[in-house]
Figure 1 (cartoon, rainbow over the protein chains, first blue to last red):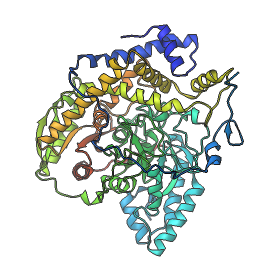
Figure 2: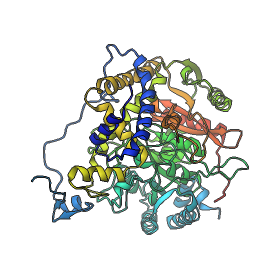
Figure 3: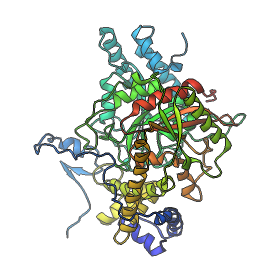
Length: 95
Length: 491
């Protein structure tokens, strides 16, 4: 399988990465090189094989459903590029 | 007094205990070495004030007789580990001037045991790379050069700063992370020892995520013993990482010098690649001969799905990365580029903040997870991963204790030499290491010799799950036989 220019633009938008028109051909070439490389997986017989979900056989640990963290709003917003009080600021989302 | 930076960690521990020198003296010696080696670009942030404060505290603890196992030992920390109050960027522009308000579990355990932080080490952006050339702080120089050449070589990646700093005697050991070979390949390129422990052995909490089902932290050090000492402090159960296992951490150092007599060592025939340099082939047979001489038994084994590990990795890892890196949105931390609306803000921030390799991998990951392609790519790759793991399980079920392979298909190469036209050329560096991550197994790279141009080469030992001890025992045999390698100082 390979991707065309329209697909490259669509993937970029899905990934939320702005891509200019003159970057598209280059990216298309690189993505197709990677897709050509992984193409060899199609020759593996995976009939009846379970997909891996956990590399170490272990029971998923569960924790008590209790509050054990919090009250650190200052820490949470400390690195934000734009805040007001304990809120993150973003461009207007709802008209 | 001999130069304090040339001591191994084990030797330094003795000297500190005997009060031959203080941690402050040891730390100052390393801070001076770092200052004199800035051309290597191994450190992206030096923290001398903090280092001296931690050294003084360690000296006080040692004087009182309650120094921890790493009391007063100066270390470098890969910039992927969150360090409280100290800028942590994963060497990406998108994290900008991110200053964590928390400490990663692994580093907090090192400080608990008395270690001293010298600063933060360079790495490939978000650990995506095999040469440390994708860092937003620029490439790292390998302290090793080809005989008679002034060309700067890469130290490997992604833990290139860690490997370079340890090899150049700038720190006594370093933290590193390994998703497809990022500890073992740079260790092999710099004649240092690097171990990627079993998945789940070290907590991933506070380590910037790349591909969560593959990422593991581990140390890079100058000897097998030093790496065992560091891993003991780094490893352990952490309730904050649900994939960290609740198994007691053994005294890894006790495995050093233990007999390997009667151990069965697998030599996988699929690792004998067409066109493999004769030097790598020779190194591999030499390594096998050393283990045999120490009483181990060599057996040929087959890992039939080996060739599919790298392509499967380049589906699984980018897919997980595209998901993990969705958090960099220009809203909660790091870089922000303005946009007319929120979507444009995201798109502009991520276009400006991510480097070319990261953008490429996030896009591939997005593609293989997108509607209509998930089954053909992602699901198939996860099935292939099951088969890769089964290859190893079958092998261990036949009584094999560990598997010996080359660590890399070549020695270090020049800055800008690889991957310019085709990204896959760079990816092939990890061909011998990536299988280990796909199967969640422990793997150690140990320096074993040099190529004809005088560059170091390493061997890899792959172990059973949670049997790092056997790797340390076998690694010590190789280290004893091959000797240790130190680069001639040119910086």
